Structure formats: structure tokens, C-alpha cells
Image (cartoon, rainbow, N blue to C red; front, side, top):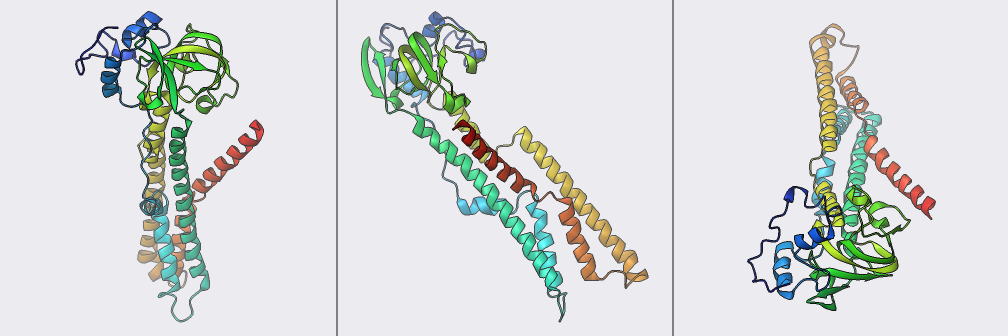
Length: 343
């Protein structure tokens, strides 16, 4: 490869960008080398690596931002169904005192404490789920090896994994960890385990030809963090850092942790809004009925405190307050069962 002046590179000249990250396992090796300005014999030139690194960035996954735990807990205390449980708990306390007079019912106080406990329980479980997602993202960084063997300027050399760029020719051997997403050029009895990404514990045999149109099932690709269980081979790096499959998973997890709105979020929010509106309308009808009719025509039928308790009952009966807790605990139980099964 000839010398290339810095900062003057069009890395994707004459490239169909509409399928850039979808057809890399399908196109011929000649097109792969052309796309990344590389070749198998000499690899990339040192000058080109400098420009490519400026374009692609370092080969590392962006770590998640450390959350503000108090703000995270505060948000969870007032999100979803908790926002309507608060009025219920406050009404229960008000029914105990001052409306309870000189002989308040301890049941009202107990009801308020129970509602506030439910709010706290749901909030802490939701925070636990958020922190667990952040912990998973942070663990991705530990899956990366420290260095890699590459061929640059026709010379094999060991470099830090962070310095890899797309187009680098890497040599991988048994016991190595794949330092980036790559397409294999040669393989001698090469077997790879991608359990960290796919959950499939059985290693697959590497090929140099495409045998599946689905990118994640193609055996001519290796993915960042996969372990080499047998053999030796050469590959060309096709994606680094946040552009790898693992990096995209990390970014998706971070977006979900940062309340990125997904279709599932929209459906859940729509359901929560529907339940809350129906609950509020029912309580309004209850109070209108009591104020305009029962209070005057049947004054002994139900008291003010009794109507407050009816409102609290209506709040609780409308809301599936145990659903978040049940889902969280259910997922935890299933994960434990899965680990026991795999072991």
C-alpha cells in the first residue's frame, strides 16, 4: 500500500453505504480489502492507521456514566403507578389524623404505612434493575484482551488492542480473545466460542466462505470478546469499539438505562396512563355522588372518612401494584434456574 497523506482520506470512496454493516460477510474478500484499503500480505500502512484512527476512534467500548443514585431513586418513587399511590397513602394518613378526631382508627394509619411501603418497594426494585443494566454494560469492558498481533507494513507486531482500526490484519491463536469484529481470511482447525454474545455455549467451526445470509450466524465472522478454543487463523478487522456488535449491545443497554423511549416503553406508558385516567375519573364520580346525593339524602350511610377509605380502595383496586415486583423477582428466579441448568 502506498503512502497516504494525513487527513485527506475518503475511507468509503465508491462504497454503497446503505449496506455497509450488513453485507460484510457476503461480499468477496477482494471487495473487503478494497473497502478498508488493506491487503492480506502487508496489512495497513502506519500512515493510514493514523488517519483511520482519527476517523473510527479508539477500539474501546464507551463505558456507562456513573448514575446519581439519589436522583435515580427519587425518579422511581414518582414514576408509573407510584404517582397515584402517593395520594392514596396521604389520604389514609389524613383519615387517621386530623380527620380521625380524638379516637382515630389505627387501621387507617396502617393502611397509609402499607401504601408507602409498596411505593418504596417498587422504587427500590426498579432502581435495582437499572443498576443491574449499568453493571452489565460496565462488564463489557472486562471482556477485551490487552494486546493483539497485527500485520502492518508487512511486519507482524504486538500492539495494544485499543490501537486497532478497521482494515488491520490480525493473527489469532488458540486461547486468544477476538480483539474486534473481524472476517476470517485463513483458518486452520479454528473454533470460536461466542457465548458472551449469543448465549450458545457450543463453539462453532470457522470458515472463510459465507454460509449464511444472517450476519450473526455467519461462520466467516468473529465478534469482539469471542474466545478462540482451537486452531489458528488470520482475519481482517471490520469494526472496532462502539461499532462492534458488542458495542452496539452496550449502547442499546445504556439507552434503555437512560430512559430511551422504545415501542415497549410506549405501550407500557399508554397502559399506565389509561389506568390512571380511569382511576381518577372513577374517584371523581364517587365524590360527586357523595357530595351531591348521599351526604344530604343518606347522611348516615357513609361518612367523610368512609368515603376517603373508599377512594383509597378504588386507587389500590385499579392498580397492578405488584406487577413490577413480580416481574423483577420472576426474572431473578429464572436467571438462577438457567445458571443451575447450564452448570
